[in-house]
Length: 258
Image (cartoon, rainbow, N blue to C red; front, side):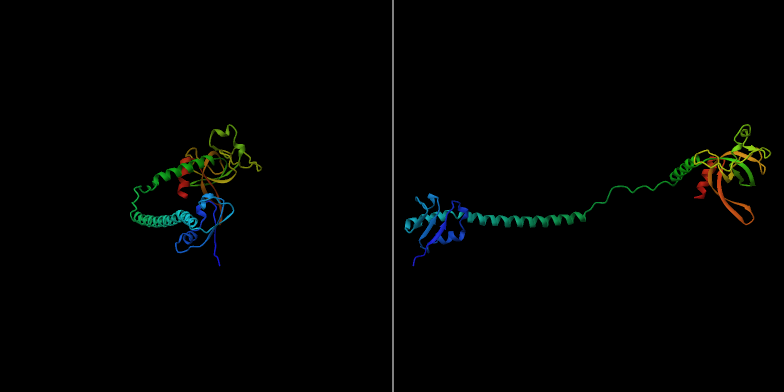
C-alpha cells in the first residue's frame, strides 16, 4: 500500500496551513509527496501538471521550502501577541482614566462668581410707577357732564354731554347748571386718548376754584385712577370708573390699590 500526500501550491506562502508545514517538515515522516502547481521554483525543478516526488533530494527541497514558509506562522503568533499587548494597554489606560476622573471629581474648585445682587425695591417701584403713568396718559378721558353728587373726595358726574364742547362754555372747567346742554344717546366712547367719557364716573383731585354746585356741568381731562362704589339710592351700590384731574394723583391711587 502506498500513501501519497498531495499539496496544492498557489505561489502564495501565506495560503499554506501551518499544520501541514509541521507535518511535511517533520523528519519522522518520510512519505511520497505529490505537488500540484505551476510554479517551477516550488519543487526545485521544472514541473508541469502533476509531479510525483519520490526521491530523497526532492523531499529535502520541499522540506526546505516548507521551512521557509513558516514565516507567516511566526507572523500570526506575533500578531496575536500584539493584539494581546494592545488590549492590555487599553485596559491599563482605561483604569488610569477612571482613577484620574475620580480624583478630579473630588477636587472641584468652588466657583469664584459672585451671587446675583438682589433687585433694589426702590428701583422696581420707580419702574412700576412709570409704567402706570404711561397707562394713565394712554387711558385719559375728557369728563364732560352734569354733576350728580358732591362728596368730600370728589364728584359723581354723568359724562357724555358732548354739546358742552363749544365756545364760550369751554372757557372754564365749570359751567353753570343754567346752561343749555343736551346729551346724545347715540354717542359711543372711543378707545383713544382724550376722547369724551360716556357714562357715570367719579372725578377726584379737582381744582379748588371755582366752586362746584350740584347739577352744574364740568369739562376737564381725567386720568384713570381705579374704581369707585357709587350709591345712587339707599341700599343700591354701583361700581363706576374713577378718574383724577391730576396725573400724579392718578398714579398714586393706582399704586395704592395694588
